[in-house]
Amino acid sequence: MIPYISFLRGINVSGKNKIKMEVLRELYTSLGLHHVSTYLQSGNVVFTASKKKAAALEKEISSAIEQQLGLQVPVLVRTLEQLNELILQNPYIGETEKNLAFLHVTLLSGEGALTDKHLLSIANKKLPDEEAQLKATTVYLYCPHGYGTTKLHNNFWETQLKQTATTRNWKTINELARIANSLTS
Image (cartoon, rainbow, N blue to C red; front, top):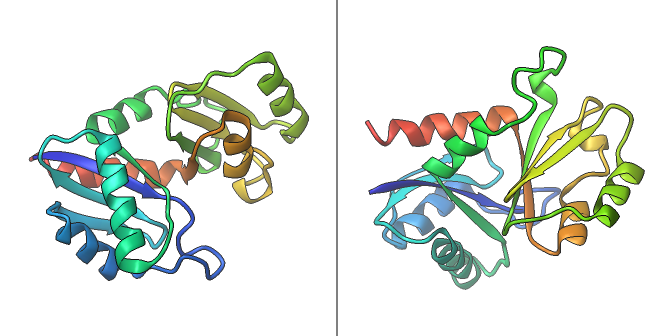
């Protein structure tokens, strides 16, 4: 069994797309997924499954949410290996002046590439001292004024890169990795 982490976009936010975590765990279990665990109320699910492609799991989970709960919710899935690599690749770790509380990760549904036009858009939108770096399917964000004030949010990345995006803070990413890593022992 392989550990996976799924990230649901836009559930339990401002009273929209409400899903209780117990219901979400039951839904995942009904799909034949194992060791299902949720973290927080924002659609972070750790589970194990037979070897499957992440894209197939994304479609399966999203379809089940729509069929069983009547909600259209984008789902992004990463393997534990991908999540561990994402953590290792963070360009802001080790920079002593960076406060980890202001680090965020935006997960993308596919690989992205920044053109000069994108870089100009980022420069025009970002607040002073904000930073963003794209590596494959991940945007690493440093938002020293807080994620709630940045203009480099999910909608910005979705518009710029024409794909689904969902963001988690650095603490959440690391906790999900810890939970998923515990499934391998």
